[in-house]
Image (cartoon, rainbow, N blue to C red; front, top):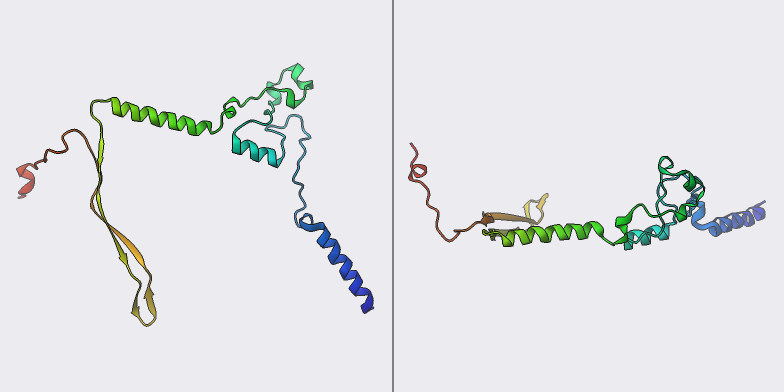
Length: 171
């Protein structure tokens, strides 16, 4: 009986080893778009990654059934034009953000009064680890002390501002 168990266990362990990850993950990586009215794209994982990385559209989007015309119902999804035209240029949103940022900066530079940011004064203090009692140890901490806040300076920033006398004397 003992001689029969060892070969059986070896066969079972061998089959589990040959099946690899498929025994642990029962899902296929490649999915099939069986429904013709499926929204989105019918592409595999590598194509989806490449499209997301480069921004270039690999396959066109499927149109909803309600927006399809009668002659398009018989045609294949690959022959339809792409609905998402802004994906043709990579990083479309980021380039729009940069353009808007440059326009705002150009507006500020062309205006008569240009805001300038003064540097604030900050002190960084490192509190080293120390032992309070035999059973308590405080770890290292960093503390920042803001002495002067940074602020926007408009125009006459070299002229010293004088406080009214009424704010100096309180009753």
